[in-house]
Image (cartoon, rainbow over all chains, first blue to last red; front, side, top):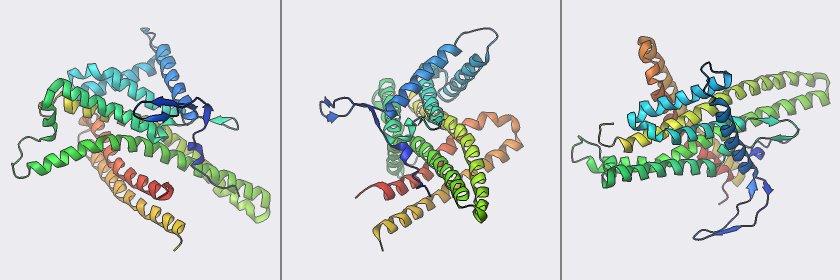
Amino acid sequence: MAAIDPLHQFAIEKMVSLPPVNVPGLGLIDLSITNSVVAMLIAAVAVCVFMAAAARGQVVPGRLQTVGESIYGLVEGLTSSMIGHEGKKYFPFVFTLFTFIMFMNLLGLLNFIGLAHMFTPTSQVAVTAALAIITIGLVIIVGFVKNGLGFFKLFVPSGVPIFILPFLVLIEFISFLVRPVTLTLRLFGNMLGGHVVLAIFGAFVAALGAYALSTGGAAYAALIPSALSFVMVVALTALELIVGFLQAFVFAALACVYLNDVVNLGHGH
Amino acid sequence: MDVSAAKYIGAGLAMLGMIGAGIGLGILFGNYLSGALRNPSAAAGERPMLFLGMALTEALGIFALVIAFIILFVKV
């Protein structure tokens, strides 16, 4: 029976080897083009091509334009309802985040059987951590630019008795520190978990089917769990399509919430 | 006990943390549905908050998953 190795799909392979670059303060860093980088480039190009094709501005929209407009409307509704009328400024950032993550998630489900499978960059902590650090970095920069040192009011809830205030400040501060960690791990964990489950059920289909066909006789009964596993794979793929979209949406929504905390600081959020 | 066996048992035990996330998600969606059926016109407006709550609840479960992965794969 074939060994089940669900984590093999996350192995990083070099496609183009580049010499290590010496970054001051960090030392030698390997900037080779790996399958993860290629998958991210494909996602970025796909977003650009899709939006260029969708943004034709016809009065009667075609199919592609309808999809593009509904994605725009979704993110626009998110920024304006969460951040308010100042949300327009942050729309490009949130829209980029949303479309990029969604395309990485959805394209990562592609599998050209026998040839190659698309790598899912969002199943790497490095990628999701970079996205989370960019988001939280923007939140901190916007917070200081808009409020100056008043940014620290974020950690001081109003209308609290003075006795428990220090504890609440501590809790608020910790919860702020945990935000990038949860942003990172949520996206990473969801994509990793989904793909591992898919790989395990796919391996069940192949292993049980091969066992039934090679042994014969009573072992043909193993075709039943094999077929059930196949149905499960189909259902899980559908679920992964939803999850890929939903996690991108959640990431964008949380970015909006965190931006709202600093943009409308002290306006009773 | 063999160390690798203990690792597998520990990773399995770490996943018990998912129980809490499952209960939390059940409460979350159940309460959203009961609220939405009482006042369907207000349901659409609260959907972003629903997904937000879902994300925050789920994150705690995924912490358990991460701990399980650390136990399994991180070499000490």
